[in-house]
Length: 274
Image 1 (cartoon, rainbow, N blue to C red):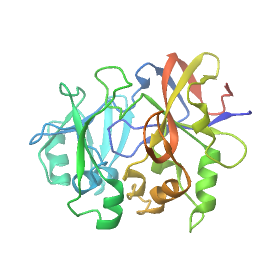
Image 2: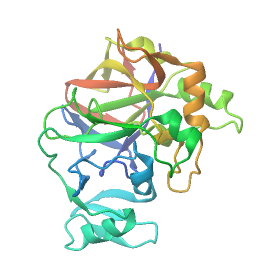
Image 3: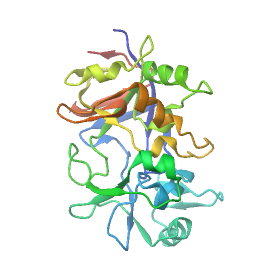
Image 4: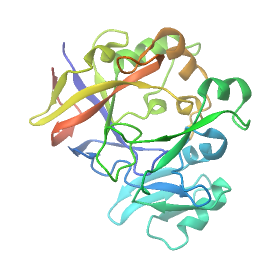
């Protein structure tokens, strides 16, 4: 199969909007600069995640970009802060309506809250719906903020399939928050069949695909200028509900998780070999 890197994305602050980059170094901790920061809820001790939309969906109105001084955060009002500014925690607390602190170190046995995505769709974003508190990053190195594994992939074939099914004809890659978008021919959920396979990218980088990505409510939320889109979850639920890992019950999936076998550089246009 012919495959190339279509685009690269990183998300300097967990659950904030990401940035597209032309090239990046990738090691066991993922793309350099990816999810290096997160907000900690001072009241609960949990890491803020838009997986619990009632509390944290406002984070997806914020931009986060890496610069020479660290990370530059842009709020929806247009004001910007560096992650090192003394008043950044106060500004973010005002935005989300809770007392939070920006941190680069996950607390011991860190957890986040994940709302039942179907209940979010049926009851609305502001409703009290069931959620579970889960440990995250079980397939990632300690001290990181990844939901599961350090690299997330999705293919243009999957995006084309979802767009064909979508009432408005478009599903944006940004909704699924991938690190790598792989350009492959055809239309379908091809990456689900890659679990256990190794991908070699560019001159050196090697990734091992370890699981399909079960989708939460996040793809349905407004992402900056992108409006809310319930079909971004409903379509995988109807057309690609599969076990993310062997032995698990079927879940709506789009994309796959990978671990880094050998570090290296990745660039847009790089070839991908299986």
